[in-house]
Amino acid sequence: MTAPTLAIDDLRLGFRGWAGTAEVLHGISLHIAKGERVALVGESGSGKSVTARLVLGLVQELRGARYSGRMAFEGRDLGTLSRREREALRGDRISMIFQDPTSSLNPVYTIGTLFHEVLRRGNPGIGAAEARERAVAALDDVAIADPGRVLDSYAFQLSGGMNQRVLIAMALANSPSLLLADEPGTALDVTVQAQTLALMQQLVARHGASMLFISHNLGVVREFADRVYVIYKGRIVEQGPTEGLFEAPLHPYTRALMAAVPRITGEGIPEIDEEQTGFYDPLVAHPGYSEAELRP
Amino acid sequence: MKPLLQVIDVTKTFDAGGTSVRALDGVSFSVSAGECLAVVGESGSGKSTIANIVLGIYQPTSGALLFQDKELPDVRSLALKQAIQLVQQNPLSSLNPRRSVGASIRLALDVHAIGDRAGRKARVGELLEEVGLPADYADRSPAALSGGQRQRVAIARALACQSELLVLDEPTSALDVLVQARVLKLLADIRQARRLTYIFITHDLAVVRNIADRVAVFEKGRLVEIAPTADLFANPSHPYTRRLISAVPVTSRREAELRDRLQEPLDADL
Image 1 (cartoon, each protein chain N blue to C red):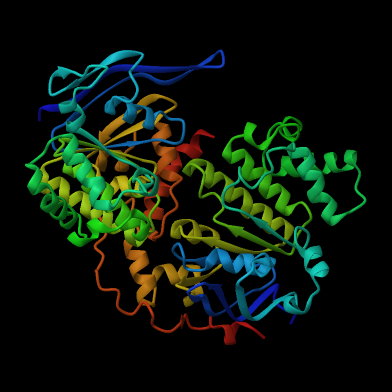
Image 2 (image 1 turned 180 degrees about the vertical axis):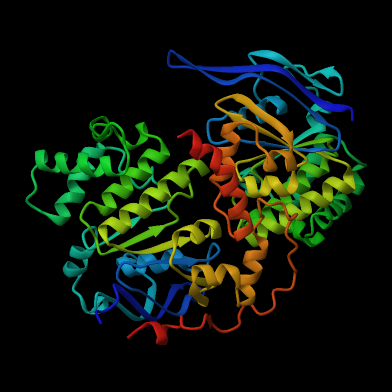
């Protein structure tokens, strides 16, 4: 069997500050098989975004970050790569969609210029005319009606939903093997969010990319992911298939989380116990879904 | 029930850079005393504009507002400001970071001269306890509180004014689900205990379903549908409402069924 697209083992992270080290991740292990859509769900401060940034190699650049553990991308240990090799992966083999679409596009360049830069990462010799042609095709794929106009616009001239689509198109432009999506669509209206996610789902399937989907929104996760990891305060507390995990959550934290979501069928305001017992219980894996069972 | 607030044919246009935007277009509705009316819509639907008009921050271009059967003037008296209060979305930016939490709440008491001066400190403590925080949190700065605690302080500050109408502008959308559930519970309890009236502005229909008595759906500045909550979710009459409900990401099979049922007529139209 081939190596999983992404494998993380016992990843620990702390930030050193004046008052000692703040531990952020307490040894998390997860993996994403080829073509799989995996969600990492948790509340703010649980360490979900920082995990994606570690995979990209962005956190390592920060002073005061102390990390240990193993991260492997398609069987290559990311820790042993040189800085240049890592940089070559970013934007080409591994790409990321950030939460706020408008602020992740540089406002002083047109979308066309930014798109050219993205395409150059995959093909350094690409000329302006060819880049534009490919950009038009990519924007067409994300259902943007007038790609030419969008390419000549600046990010602030477009709506949030439009920018999010541009980002999705950019992230998939070089057909990456791994796409990291940090709360995509959270900044969008519900109807636009639903369209955008459906679009992303189709495109990811078409490109055969694996995906790490980071979100706090349980409903979105249920619709999008094949498999789910629930993270609480830097620890993975439950993992399993999406359907099984939503129908029968096993860990006390996951149960509390599910119970707290208001329902459109109107079951009243959820009652939450003030007691948070069992949130620190050890990891619960659904049968057949532990790391040991899933990884060859 | 007698209406506390009546909004009659309100239109608001904004002029900027030679173009004018009609943010509200002939909107009329009324809010009964003691009810929770949810105002839902997507960005640009005019839901924040209507909140600002109710609060007297903007003046309507045309139309009128009646509060307790009296017309609301453009410039509000102190008594009217006291009667209609606001809780904002982001408690970190709505609380002064240089002022202790207690001082923020006390300011409301001082401005509206509520209670005698000597008793106000104790009153601040009571208000904090009413929203589920220890009274000695009064000495803390907003930075020393979590998001949920800050939102509780913002609610306490609005309660301090002993207002009759609370405008809640996305009060829980910046909070995590576990915290959101507790704050929603608190808001529902306070409404009952104090017989308050809420205008609850939000884009989250799942929250609306569980807290509101009636729902007003806005689209591009128009009020497209207003109905009791249960009716609206069981049988939305406007296609936009249907679209809005069927776009909500859901977490259980029962909800998915409801959503698919609402989706069907939309698919038939295509």
